[in-house]
Image (cartoon, rainbow, N blue to C red):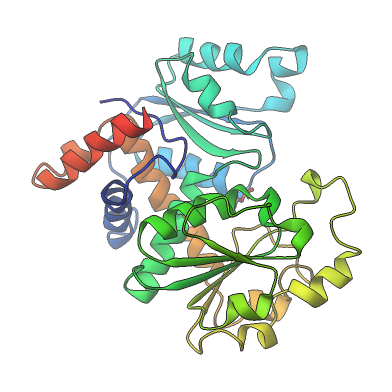
Amino acid sequence: MRRHLLTLRALERPQIEALLDAAQAYADDGGRSRPALAGRPVATLFYEPSTRTEMSFELAAARLGAVVLRCDVDHSSVRKGESLVDTARTFEALGAEVLVIRHPASGAPALASRHVEASVINAGDGMHEHPTQGLLDLLTVRQIKGRLEGLRVAIVGDVLHSRVARSAAWGFTKLGARVILTGPATLLPSASPVPGAGMTSSLDEALEGADVVMTLRMQMERQAGGFVPSLAEYARGFGITDAALARARSDAILMHPGPANLGVEVSLDAAYGARSVISRQVENGVFIRMAALEWVVGRMETRRPSTVERHKALDDMAQVAG
Ligand code: CP
């Protein structure tokens, strides 16, 4: 069954767990190549810059044997005014079975999904969601902590503009963790975007007892200015340093989706320190995207025919996400 992966908001716990389990299976065998998508075209359409997401989707597709059609947007007919929908339909006409779309406009991948038969994966849309980032964050914490249920996760920084924060908050909350969103009041939404996730402008309150500290990139490209007096003052108030981490649990881990503004939302020492799992997040991105690609084209479950419960969860997921 063909599906889209547009948000974590639309997925239920068993469905998220099925994707994590599939990704973990890839991690366990080192992401070895397999021919699940042999010869099948997968298109990547990135209307915003990316290193981790785009490269890991390409690597994931290659490991599954797919043919990657990379749309270099700045040198494509988008520059001549071709719309997103027309571009998506063009790649579909070229044979693409999956369209991986990053776009500055919230809802752009969902719009494209309504005009094509191909599966659409949201690779980050505006200030809305970044579901595969959320999944790789969940996988990383589950690997290191052995569970998600009952953990306390502090998400720190530019929550207002962050699609990463939204997907992470949905994912962690659905899997039983307690999420606290924090940042300067000017960079917090007026109400928590995720029911069940707390929100405070006190960093101390958020860090108290935290098992996971996720600091967010300051989204300069989405800030018209005036959100913080200066980056230096932001760093003094909300930058995550070794001293700030000492206010969390002694075994707390540090996450950042990347790319990091070192010295702003996170210090170099903390980002490269013993508590940092930033590189693990990047590594897990490949496994999550292998699972996501297989899932949207309806191949993930046929590879593991014995997991009857997973089949049902995935079919339920298709109805919710479809
Ligand atoms: N985390 C993330 O989306 O990074 P990229 O912008 O490099 O893809």
